[in-house]
Amino acid sequence: MSKHERVVIGNAELWLGDCREILPTLSKVDAVITDPPYGISYVSNYRKSGPTHALVNDDIAPTDAVVRMAELILDGGALYLATRFDVSAQWVDAIRSAGLTLKTPIYWDKGNHTSGDLEGDFGGQVEIFLFAHKGRHKLRGPRVANLWRVAREHAGDHPTPKPVMLMERMISCSTDRGQIVIDPFMGSGTTGVACMNLGRRFIGVEIERKYFDIACERIENAQRQQRLFA
Image 1: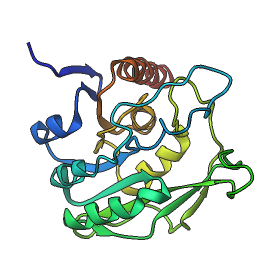
Image 2 (image 1 turned 120 degrees about the vertical axis):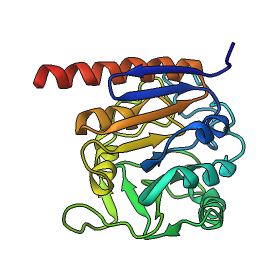
Image 3 (image 1 turned 180 degrees about the vertical axis):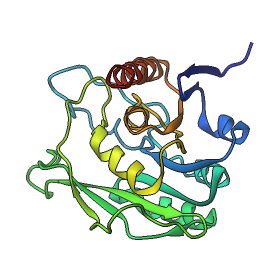
Image 4 (image 1 turned 30 degrees about the horizontal axis):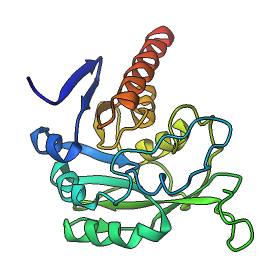
């Protein structure tokens, strides 16, 4: 019996398993948009109102997955990768080593800042998305600045949720309808929901059953909504 599980929901292909094992088996994609796990477990009180849950493999930035991402990207395709500032240099090195071209990063302004060290540190109000591409990539639509103000959404069951609107902006900037976006660290499926909303094909990989099941449900609901509107 395979240790990987594959679920197809409309134009979404979802995999349960380690992306480093699954990515080499997949076909080429037009963009990678992802938020790899790192450094959540060290914060013991990130959500005092509910139970905490450390992410799998969250103690070491999984930079070894970058070369596999790069191999999947078609010539002219793009990579958007979320990172904490203190490990961004590791991701930058991995992206360059994989042969991708780094461009200006995106800073997501969440509209409010984190807690953390209240007396000895500044409140973090932005998160970083590294932006890179293979070959020559052309952005869609008018040129925009790299500071994006997008309101946070309800945290839900995942410790590092990103707004659907934020992922939609990246998808819209770098892909066209019908093209393929992959998220190798899918989490609860936000990138997939954004793809469904915009008419893109989606491939998602998630190692934790809990979040995989949530992603399947969210993506199926998003497709159902699109059919209703159609």
